[in-house]
Length: 260
Length: 202
Ligand code: SF4
Ligand code: FES
Image (cartoon, rainbow over the protein chains, first blue to last red):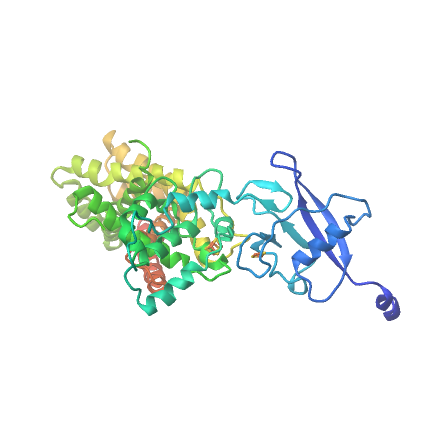
């Protein structure tokens, strides 16, 4: 091939995309090839496919379905498995990816369609472990206790979790054979227990963590902390919660005059 | 309330793996090491262990029940994971997988080993230097025993690492890194003790 012929050849981006019409239908892979533009991310490429839904063979096909929201890695909605790694598609830059770029949904979750998954179980888990601070009362309770600034800064890091589901996808113990809720909601318990007002219901959250599918199911593969796009110290949270729940377990068993 | 018991079973599983099963393992490997000082020493040491008062109770409550609870519950744990070393080839993920693999292999090895020694003893055989010498004369058995001992010591040492995490003793990444090195050291030392004892019989 001569230099001039490569020059005239149009540069393209190749994709292999997992397709599944709905929850129960058989999945298959479809190949796509779209014209190259500089600085694309996976989402802008998916938008290009949606604009012109033809596969590599030139056949007309249905546009690929995916989920997105903020487009700046804070909402977590656009997570998918890109070249084998679970991550956000909005911050996955095409120029940095090996081609063909393989897109798959995070199959730890039920697949709604193509790359779109249903992360409801994560929100259910947050409810289960009471990941909130109860402040409602019948009268104004006034301001809560102050939080030391140092602790606020530390807690801010834990609060960055966007329920994206990447840590659940990475965890070998989150799968259809187990009901483990996964790392994200565990770390949220540490966040809310560290809050001075939240600490008033510390024992309730710890007891919830000791239920089935809770903290006990962690097997310490530590994939979660590697995978989390927000750099949340998940394994440190898990070990700290291990200490807290063990103490809670002894308190529950032997009885204690200090509840929280 | 049969539900919501998993947490306690897991904690019990972690505890029993070290106390008493892990402690017994160390004691057993050290007694075996007498073999390096000749048949006489080994037989004496084995004799002392055999002569312990209340032996049958010690064996049942310190060894068999904890061991088989740990083993069988461990098999359940091993088969509820979905290993993913291809996506996550990190050191800890490999340790996670190896912990499950060595757990299953160790169960097979230990069961065979108990059959060949304790059960045979109950059926009238004498457990002594000659018995082990006869078993290990077969090269296949020698390899099986070496693999079994290394698998057991690995499972114990790495299990000790996760024991420290499970009980909230090592929390920070640095403490967990230090305990990785410490338990790796324990693995090497116990393996040397175990293999030296095996080789003393051949
Ligand atoms: S902990 Fe990290 S990986 Fe897990 S859901 Fe939150 S942001 Fe995503
Ligand atoms: S669209 Fe919100 S994280 Fe990607």
